[in-house]
Image 1 (tube, rainbow, N blue to C red):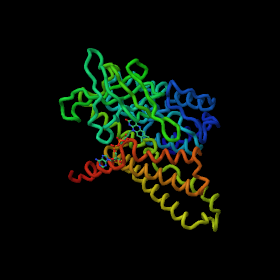
Image 2: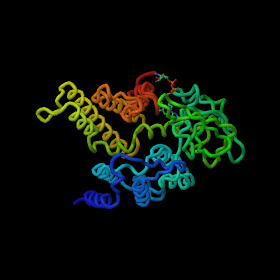
Image 3: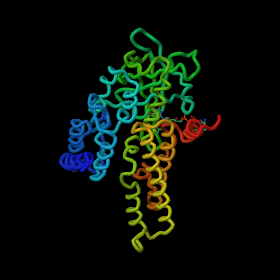
Image 4: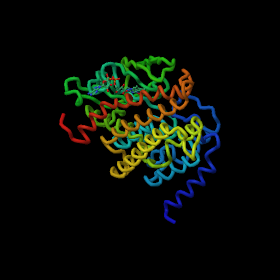
Length: 384
Ligand SMILES: Cc1cc2nc3c(=O)[nH]c(=O)nc-3n(C[C@H](O)[C@H](O)[C@H](O)COP(=O)(O)OP(=O)(O)OC[C@H]3O[C@@H](n4cnc5c(N)ncnc54)[C@H](O)[C@@H]3O)c2cc1C
């Protein structure tokens, strides 16, 4: 038996003993925010146990609250969690975006200050990138940060800031040199959201929900200790964070475990009936098969990219996962709704909300058109 086999057996036994029944299957997942109270007992117990084990961020070093797992062990953990339908104990902008970025660009003091709090689910972050007039052309951003001794004074506004209303901290791109060419005068800073210089205005959607906000910064402050990377070199840090965001690293590392369309097939069996062991509607069956094949190709490509990047988050190639991943999500929800027929389209229904939400997947985290530009230039090397 290899060491990895032993690890699998131990992990399986630990999960069976420690993942409560109420933390298996759909349900609440903590994002670490101090402003959201999770009341479900099993969800909280699961979070506490995973924090103690360092498995909220299994592959981070133990010194920063992680589990110190090697890539192969991490894959085993995710496979074993999936086997018992265990929900992630923590899913946040901290674990997927700013955490991995600080691991690469943060000073030791920044890592020790911020990473353990993320791992322990004691903080949630929001992303202060987009501004009115600066979305796809992000480098044109105008929010100014001026040097004021031991801190920066920040003025401007950010828009479409997901979860700003329950975030504790923001990672933010600011202009620190207005004279320099646009990518060169940008810095990457961290700032607490609970301060007098920050006003958060919710943006209401047609559904009545407000998942994102406009954030006004009027003499807001960020400590110089929270400048990540060098002054005026924040564009490099900010772009790398986007690669972590676009990679969906967790599913990337686990690429290949389980079948995404299993639930779709089961639903189709119910909706159309079964003939000769197959979904009875031949046309719909073909479409499901097409989806499954695309998904399999996607998972294999993810695996290859992770192997080629030696287990870390790949670079510009992550744009492939952003484009294909968001299109697959949309395809999944199209199929799901279609199979429910006209009654599937009731406004307010959970599946319809999901369908609507996934329309945005090809826009957020950089629109798919822009990702295709990145792929053309940075991956395929095509001329401008
Ligand atoms: C649900 C959701 C959550 C979001 N959360 C956040 C967040 O938390 N923090 C944050 O900072 N931002 C967030 N955003 C903003 C998101 O990053 C931007 O919406 C996105 O980058 C596009 O910018 P824009 O909306 O200004 O569109 P524009 O840049 O105005 O683009 C409009 C259209 O033109 C196309 N286009 C633009 N330039 C090009 C080009 N060069 N080549 C080809 N096509 C082009 C785009 O693809 C798009 O279809 C979120 C957006 C959504 C929808």
